[in-house]
Length: 620
Image: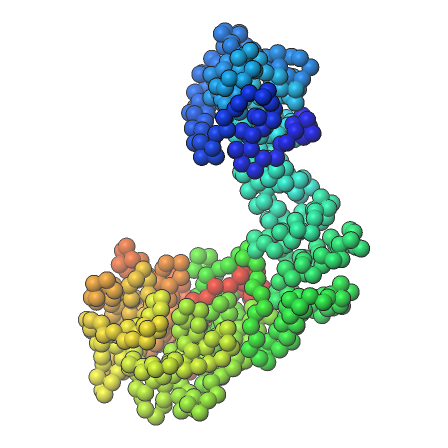
């Protein structure tokens, strides 16, 4: 079967099939076109009917035997060459909207009981009827599967189209997937198109170097390279593919370079390749497109100045770079990464300044210490300076009490070393690359309180004031700039730590009033009922630790305990069993443990990094 023999094959909707009936059976008699919704209902009914029949093998065999024995047939199909096939109106009508509308009309073919289908060969007609009567047909070659799909599309046989599409989907390769994808799109094979698209994404680099891909139009190439789903070894591959495609027909394709080049995620290209291969390429030198030039300039500035200034990312990496959620454990200049699901540890480069607070925001890690702020850039695997607070107001508020992330922005709660409970809230905007005080915010949290974020709200719990350990809890709405007093805790806590999970606030640990004993008590706050309740205690008493949530599981990291080795244990909370268990231990050698100062301890925060970044880290 060939496309040219089928006439107007490509119809965008089922209604197109009905129109083809008019074209094919043009006899001058009136013919009622059904609506799109009516045909959709009929197709759904047909699919349900055929799926039901597919579970009744004996029924299908009986129908096939009925056809072959010609008992009783009431209609005739004629293939090219004149071969006649005796069939049953009821079976054809059940199988296809095409036949249903034809056989229920007053057209001449319906009345005479015979219709010629000259575009179908004798063999193809036999195979189509075999599928209609039995629900199956043997396919041994790609060409045969394509012929069946084209015929099924013409005759409105969606199940045959799907059946033959599975054959093609099981035989995808880098050399045939491009043609298979566009064939599937042309004939509305949704399942085949989706499977082929996924295959192309996963094997994109190999596919893009095949002749069939290099013969695609500029719009088709742009569709693929703009996708976030393509899997690459490096972003440089996209630039190489564009250059190769241009060179296949250089004079005629140069005009498309700018439209394609803008889809290269230059921020993910290595420094050496950017300077040695991209900038020096003649097509890049000849660029006049403002958007492309802006992206190139931004990428160059970022690569050159990232270690000296705080520049934004001009583009984001492809989404298909696999991400891992993990835990950062940091102490002094040391930063470790733990992946709970894999139970593996990795070493990050040491920070330039000792860590006081650390957070992960928009793919980067920020370290805050006394007037020194740093950012970890996974692209170059190093720490660089971030603009610190440098206003007159910040001179007196230089102690970072807490660093938190609320809806993509970093907030610092800063303390005044002279006036203990005098705290202020500052915001770092990634978009504006600047620090700004939160306007009209009179911070009501106390010194040594626990701070937890849930959506747009900041919760401050407990703390120390005037020689007393506090039980008070408050909620600050960042959007409305309002404070709400909440129910008091069951027991006052200072230097405790907490996190949110499933609309509940968890607070644990702390220190006694006179600082002579670490605590392991834990409480949970139910937001809906405005009530606190005790839950299972930590296995190790500690204060100033870090509680965090990774993959819907709470973890406690670090903190201070008079026995330094005990505080190295990472605990996880089982909500169903209401118990804390030691999940892992922060890896420290005996020499490292012996070298620790009395006041040093680990803290923790959550982090999400690309798998390729993690693969380059030093495992422990």
